[in-house]
Image (cartoon, rainbow, N blue to C red; front, side):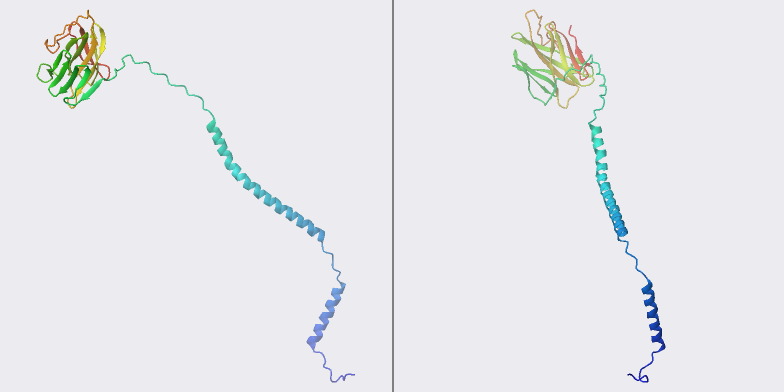
Length: 256
């Protein structure tokens, strides 16, 4: 048996701690713990999962709508482009011109450049004027464009002609007209003959026309190359007209 004199008596702090422990033990003994709401927790968890899935699906569906929205206007635009617009009424065609310009027959040549109009009929130009040969005149002939026999300030046409083997060889100077010479028409007893033009490069204001045609026995051909600048074939040729690029008259000769 312990000697009460040897046991230490508890201090004030230890006594208070023991009292608190006993009080807590009594309170805890009187408390009955409630059951955990497991069913409510599971129900709330299922609601949260459903809400989360709906949110994810809604976001995915929105992402799908973006490309569809981008594709739809393009498809609409392409469909609009494929739509055939109403045909516009075609503008009325202009009435045909009554004075169509003739096709140009003008050829610009270098000094001394030979132009063969027909076998044996050759022409060339120099700064002085017209040179040519014909089947009946193998030696070169010459008509001046600068000797004063023609007035190059006034529109005019000259005529030189020869005949051989039933064919007429016609040529001459033209000069003084306004605009640019383009074509020539020769009215003969055998019909209208369309000739050609040549001009010397760097020498505007004059040139040479030429043509050939068949001649019948009753054509009334009178070859006289020495009859002056407008001499020759006065019965065969009735008119020589040099046309400009607009179809107007550049210069004209009416020998009879």
